[in-house]
View 1 (cartoon, rainbow, N blue to C red):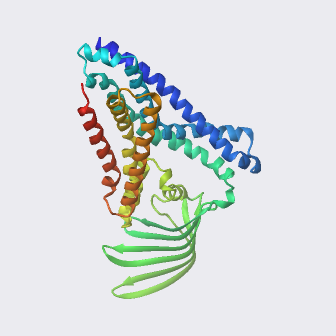
View 2: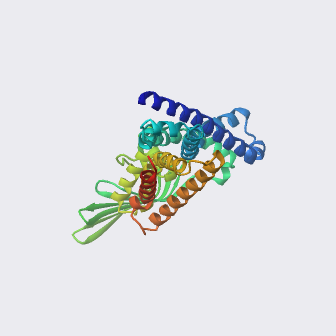
View 3: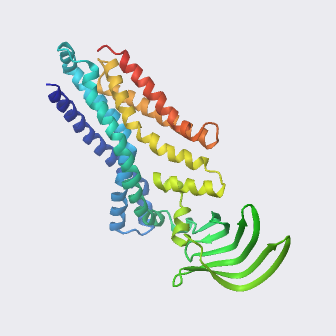
Length: 358
């Protein structure tokens, strides 16, 4: 009987879930079309580009709508059960609210993992494919093709690139410092570094070389020279210097490790990394609050339930963004800055559920 009960509740939940997620996605697309239709026309984008743009945007819209969808779907499911007196009948037959809710709580845990992989694999991949169209839509001239102040900590040296152009793979104002332990032993300064595809090496132009031997400095100049820098090529430079908002969880982890090796600050990126895991847990939180909102207000209607859902999701977004700001400014640790909101909401939601009459 309990297995049939779980199937019955989950069927109602997923029917509501599908209708709501589709509605949100369609609304987001319509609003975006209204907002950008003039840009599509003025930038001369083809119908195929417009279609691809919105097709590739769907995963992002789903990701945004998922927490709200789970909350509203849970509220509607339980309000329906309340209105049909089905919860009263189940409680009269000896089945507790905890048992009635258990299948949806398990689904909330499952959605935490689904949300994490969906965001970091599907959403990020479609985002990368959408970038060329988005640049054209927002006028490519407004996007920089250069990056300033790039640093790399290599095995026994430190590389600094003052300016790098992604279009032609040319770096300017180059400095490579070689160390023996903590002692600087030599330094190479070059006006340019150009990637040689055939030799898969960097070609340095107008080189100045300084060496420190027994406390004395020697100088040398060269017009140009080839240098092979291990694990460094144009594709790696471009990947390392993308906007961290465009990185998935694993790319952020790798990026943070490189910042650590370079001795640079990585607080902001750590906050972004922990945010990706914390926000995925909103699925469980929203289902938990959806249950408690419905159970604690048994006579509420759909409008009241949806209204309370909007308040909850608004407060959650507000607090988690506040936490991010505190983390960026090192007021809280990167982990705690985003996870304290989840901990707070889970404790409060669990407390409300335990206070309900079973």
